[in-house]
Image (cartoon, rainbow, N blue to C red; front, side, top):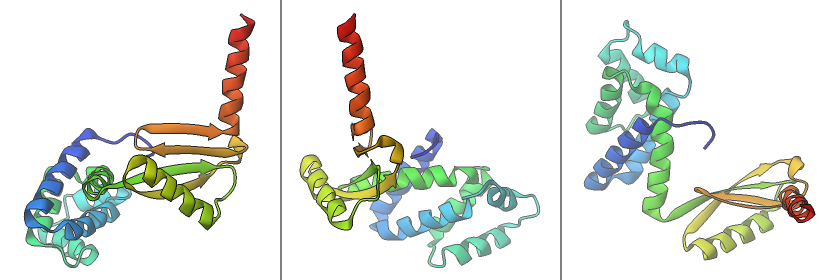
Length: 181
């Protein structure tokens, strides 16, 4: 997750997850929250949706275009966020909600940084190995950073494993500097 997320987004996401559980409609809520994220992806979208000239009827019509299957409860969430001028939390709510849903489904997301693009078979092997280590299904998002020189940097949640060549060189330099003292 790049950037800082508003903790209020976590509270809304947790409340939405509880509602989704009660309704036994997790997939429907995932779709609705993806729609919320789309509607609020840019500050100018939020400003237009929160503008004084935006009527509730027009707002609901816009939401229904983006989330055609929105239930009355889902639509009420959108309306509540608008009424409280909290639509700007949409991306944070979506981000936190994805994490909560992944946890609910036993999925861990790993961000893997490598110096070159990972081949599909290597990526699949990495997913299997991480799944064995975590005891969860793991999906891998890859990033390329030639600056790490080689190896991998793996982040799962708040855990970071730096197995990059650059990281190993830094560690070696640090050990040598301590030994010289």
